[in-house]
Image (cartoon, rainbow, N blue to C red):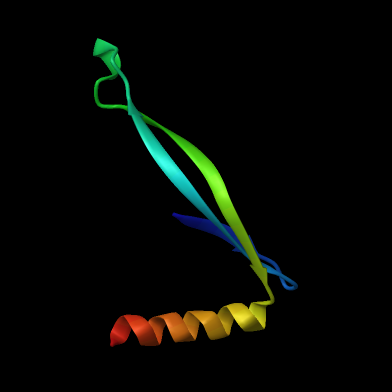
Length: 62
């Protein structure tokens, strides 16, 4: 799952894996906890991020 942020100088995307752990307690049956581990971090300029977004949208539309 990707997560990240941006500033005027940098666009950042974190790629992480997530493992879900169901809880056993009777009072919290519907709650699920998760463990996230960052696998990679991608940093790029806002201009590059915009080009990547355009390219990704083109690929999705095909």
